[in-house]
Image: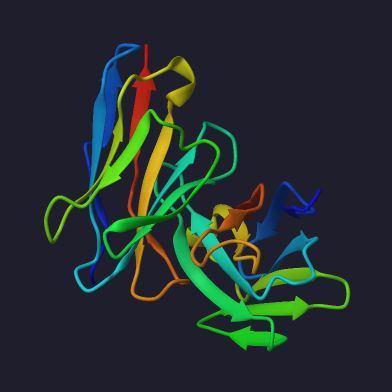
Length: 112
Length: 114
């Protein structure tokens, strides 16, 4: 069964450093998303992406964040200058249509 | 404010019994709802979805019920198994949001006891 995959599974970085989180969505999907989950809290929407552009972004997704689909298979989330409060689990999701979304296993980001 | 939330933070269920997980939503215009299961250290796993033009939908051992009158959503799991132990989230896609922007509830921890 096709799955969304994410790398790395864990990332530790120093505050102020740039990180890139990578995702390989399910191959025939066209809709892509990033969510985050701070430890013990609910899953929060960050951004949706379709047709090579952002469809919607939340207030969390400020100028420090960017997304890219550099080729036909990868979908990345970049945080330019990480802050302590960026520590969270980051989930990528993809969907064949605009609603049903399948989530990856997540990348646990720890900013020190 | 508008929100999606869960009534019970923790639900303890005996193996073999049926589980019922509840979710309240406040946006009466919401038209699409999803239940996700999240096991420890993993991403949310799609269980079942329902549109607002339906009041019931069944899957394998799961049933989702939607009561639009009281803005209430429930997930029923039949013959609960140890592998059903997880956190369950309801999520909605509101018509005021763009497609695909899911609003998640706080989650209910389901613990299956032998």
